Length: 131
Image (spheres, rainbow, N blue to C red):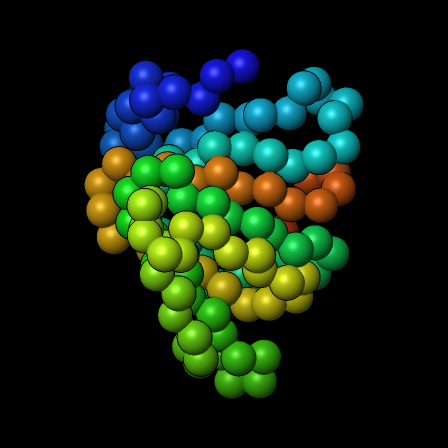
């Protein structure tokens, strides 16, 4: 499968039409595939809650656009680090360790990321989302 600009454009249009301003594209080989790999188009203003993944790290690669990753301390849940990821810049990817509180915001319209996590998909539990 080729991941080309047409696919990214289609995904961006779906994100713009979505109430959450996000759209994803599953890259697994089948439903039995034990990996988590997807493209995620995210538009500015998309509400992404502060959350963590207790059992998996998360790798984020910006394919197109500009994204800001916000990291929160474990005690008071205050922002203690901000990482800007921009396609073509000096920082285009990062690995978020398991258990790290984080959120993300798209800075540019048309932003698309490749997102990968360890193991099979497990939905976030209430204890893994800050409201």
